[in-house]
Amino acid sequence: MVEHWMEWASLLLRWLHVITAIAWIGSSFYFIWLDLSLRKATRLPDGVHGESWSVHGGGFYNVQKYLVAPESMPKELHWFKYESYVTWISGFALLVVTYYWGAQAFLIDSSVRDLSVAQAIGISVGSLVVGWIIYDLVCKTPIGKNLLLLGAVVYMIIILAALAYSEIFGARAALLHVGAVVATWMTGNVFFIIIPNQKKVVASLQRGESPDPALGRQAKQRSTHNNYLTLPVLFMMLSNHYPMTFVSEDLWILVGLVVLIGAIIRDYFNTCHTGADGLRVRWQWPTASVLIIILALWTRPETLVLDARQVVTDQQVHSIVTAHCANCHAERPTIAGFTAPPKGVILETLADVQKYKAQVYAQSVSSQAMPVGNMTQMTPEERAILGHWLERH
Image 1 (tube, helix red, strand yellow):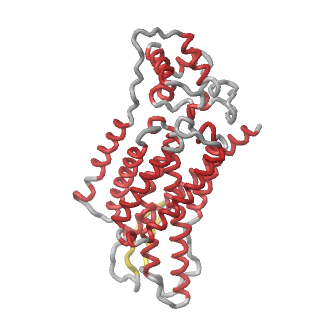
Image 2 (cartoon, helix red, strand yellow):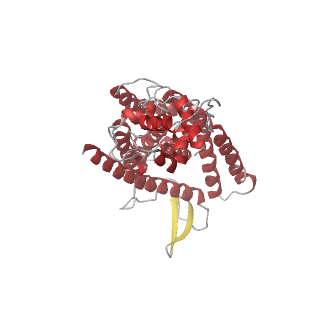
Image 3 (cartoon, helix red, strand yellow):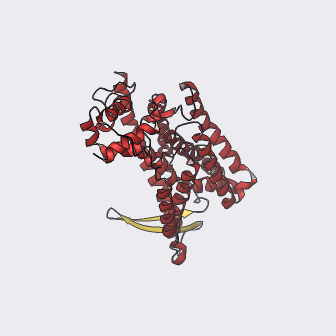
């Protein structure tokens, strides 16, 4: 019964996480577009940096941006922050329900590091906290004054995080945690830097004082990071559904490529918003496409070689499936935490295996993503036998 409610919690939290992520990313991307689309115009009020005209839903909108603030503060001022907070909270709750509750299956891979549940969860939570502290401190050093240099340092920190996680967790959990630590930076930027700085600026204006320009520069620094890190984080969060990304060795290469690809694509849209043309907006997609091809080629699975003289029987395959697949993929799973076969896939007979042969081959032979965390210690030889049989049926 507990597993039933945990499944519902997982579904509802995932739903909430997607909804709030759409709201956060949508508002963030809108304001980035708005900021970059501002144009100078005649007869603008004093202090207005530029304006943008747009049409939506049958109405016309005229938005103006003040470099500092209008002469008098408006009675109603809209803040955009709760989208970020609820996205992180729901994401962490989903991490708890899926990866902490099912730590033995999803978080721990004994072939990588034999951890207790408490150790694995402690490392997971602690790494999010430590990751934020390191990132925040680096941004506040003199390095932070040079956005390009800071970007390179942050990029290296992400790669180091991938290296560290791949030595602790299984590939699925490791990649997800890289995304989680970067997502923590992004919400931390909003909670600890951007919103507090904006509040200090508003308070200064209300007192009739000139705001500290350093507050704006610091908020802009973190906002820029959030802008360029959004697409890579989305990839990492979606990756747990795609086993070809579960590369246990050299995970840092995959992460490095994904961050580059996401940042390059984001740069294209940012540049287009400014009205630029020519080579400035023509190099991104070809470059990103080449990197995507490199990524796809690099993640190709190794071929499992089986001795050509070895005879593979139906009984061998049935035994392998029974030992390593049917405990989860059964009408009534015997593994704790599973109330129903994942994705409705039942693998109790050889006919079932043939029915789902493409999925079985992808998950258990090509990517070796299943069994989850290799809980049943499926050997390379067993994977080769299963693959040999699937190729001939």
